[in-house]
Length: 335
View 1 (tube, rainbow, N blue to C red):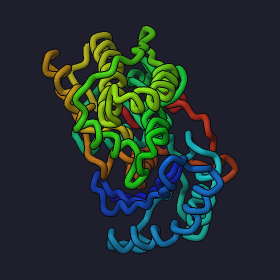
View 2: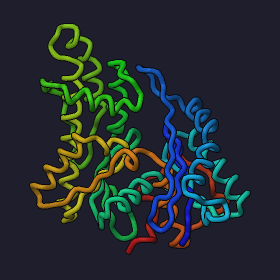
View 3: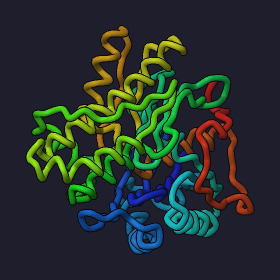
């Protein structure tokens, strides 16, 4: 019964998780929160991760009731993500692997989300909508690859929401996206915004520029409220995502949809996806914030699958990469 320890730190979340044969034994996490109206810089985020990662490691082992001797493999996020945070976590993973004399496995962050979603929900072979602060992709598995059927051609949907939160000076605690979601529930007026779907791809930079430019003018004249703008932005970008996901499901003949990534725990997005799936006679799978938001257990789970399939990452190849596409990885652990 292999037990895998996973390190995740590709953005402002730092997590250490333990998974053993499909069971999540521990999954502690910390978040680097910055003041309202600001984002998070790579260097400052890396300092935060370095300050807490050893405490998280001990917390994970204690929660899992395991010692270093019980761990069979160390998994870490190889990419994609922000360079400095990724590197700070990879250094710890490499060090722990050498100190404990354990094999090391570098994991694609996106595939970590997918494998965690499959484990928690029991989805068999779903069309995946992967939505987060750094990535927006529609994915389906075929012939030992997670194939990208559609994606953003500029910024990720989570980045669009986060940057709009800065315009309104919305709190980053617990996350700007969560706070936009709560404000959107009180919105009553739908403001028309640019809707940009290009075939199977989407674009969010135009809608962000439009709403950034219009927000202060519309708020100053009383045309709408901040809640109306949050509501309108959510409705528009989520409708775009539902459209391309449905098109991918039709192409694949899929009867399952799985939402993963930090934006995936948005209840309104889940409701819109649920409506689409019901109309198609399909089933929707989604998780809550424990597993949607970046966490160590998802890296441990993907690492467990890779470890069982014989994957090992030699120290000479144990660096990180900010650009690491989902379809670059050969998925040898699936039929």
